[in-house]
Image (cartoon, rainbow, N blue to C red):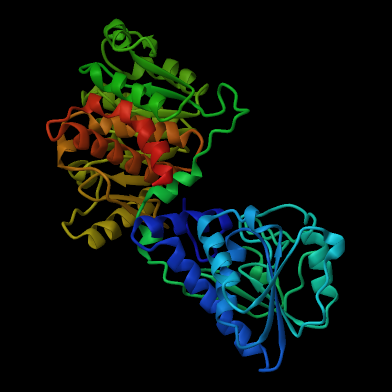
Length: 484
């Protein structure tokens, strides 16, 4: 996930979840959002004005339930479109229940034919939030039409109901707001509205965007109607002096959700690599190391895959580095480059989309400037990523992931992961993620998931873990963590 100055609804969900993981609970954010709505309404309403809040059953409505408590001095009514039982989140329901214990007038409307507004002076549109797209459905469509026909000042919460917060598209019948109060950052499409837009700071820490956390896992999905191949095919190019590394990377890619993973390795070790697991599909090439004679064959294999993981166990023999260089020059797909082939990346002119996963020493050999200070190191990683036009995932106590424009930090992982082979796991996990995600979020989640798998291993076994402890814990790190 890459965040900019404008943030989509899906990205906002990630930030909210990351804020919760960092200690700022959703209930606190909702309270701040409601307070901000209340301030905006008070700026627009005269003391004797009649205020109508029209709320949906999601968290957008929950923000408005809070706002009502800050607007109790007005002639106020809040209309819930739907029944209280249909309120979708616990915190929104808690705020509705709190509202019903006040003297504020509340009503529920499920039938669009029964909707009326009774001539308010100010209307708060909190029907649909940033997670909704498509055309307006009943009873929201009728409510929106009534709001647009009313002779009242209309304040929309986060986005006008009907505006798609992913694309900025405006559906027919979208609420015609006179003012928008949105949270944290502007949403797509708001800049195109000819109305004032207030962006309220509701207390989301900068770290919720900068640090990779469990909210980022919301970018993963596994629809029920998925088919083989939907989640990518990965080719691991590795082995020669080492046999375990390519097998470990391949098994990690499978555990991270890739549908098919194949290993291209020298024929001299193919049987050994295949013997590590019945899940491995081995595609041998002639010889006992990756050399220029094997490049055409490997490149042909790579063309049939979504992602290539280049490096695990290849070694640093000169013919192997020459082959890695030649492969990258003629490759235009997506590749995760790890271990010894990282040395050739700075000198390669390639059309490939590269995610490079160096440790500190490899980063320095690529031309980066190492630093013990995290901020200085992040700046150095961003600078080299921009210079090389690659995504860098620099491993360390705090991993740094940058594409030169966006830089994020990952804090999962532990000192037990200094053991050999954990980098192969990371390369495989990242390769699987890069088959379905853009490079920067793939690298960010690759670091988070691999580190979290290592943390789960230490929680269970203590230090002294080995790299083979990690792959089986990758699915738990990816999916169970989504719920915190």
